[in-house]
Length: 322
Image 1 (tube, rainbow, N blue to C red):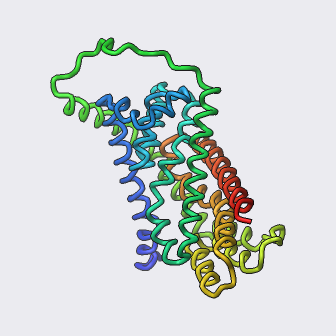
Image 2: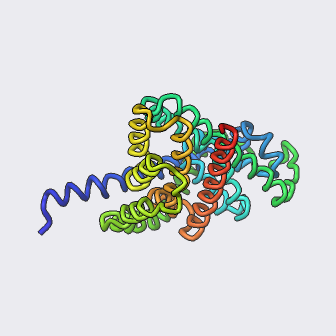
Image 3: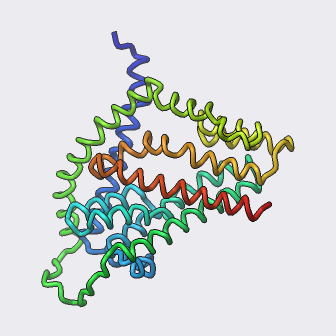
């Protein structure tokens, strides 16, 4: 028999989070489609024009980059729409998703900053600065890679668009958006809902927690770290980032660890803990925006580049701060 407590648990941990995800996906889809219907992509692309021009990236990629500073979901939806309508090749879609590393990093910056600073004080500025530096490196590197992998776009002469501007552009754009939204949102929901439910069941069965704890408990190969540093890693991976921060703050306050070692161990924990959390939290909505196979490919590429760039910043910090 299903009890009131079970129904409440299902609503709080499955129903409401899934509904909230679909609401945000709907908003992101509407924004992306509306911008595209108004032909504002070139205007938004101005922010990233020097980088996109150098990297042979399209104005649509530049527009998604600008939009990503405000909504990563809307930016990804814009890229998915561009791919569906053949405005982006599969190669540019992957590069564009990686290109958005910098703005997507800034989306989470305020939360990380205001949690980390009270706990680990000045070390927070170094840690956040290094993660931003890693995002800048990723974006610049993707720009260089794109320059060699993508053909130079052909120039389109201004004023040659044969389509006349509608008398009421906002109304026409809104009607076009709503017409396309229903079909696209139905398709997104058909992927997102079952995948989200599957991941909820795996989470309730303890799969992700067991995986994180397994990794946290098998860090013998990192014996070069101090026992205090290993304890931070264990908390960061077996629980969450805030738990690792709390452990780091306690060790910093007691004088058991220096700020330099805390920054390094938080960077290492960031690299090791991100993949499982990306699969758990990112894949369900990615699989709705993109097709499931493509979503897995995008997450694989983004997590690989992210891990390598953060590892590089950790190495440079370790070398330069000795």
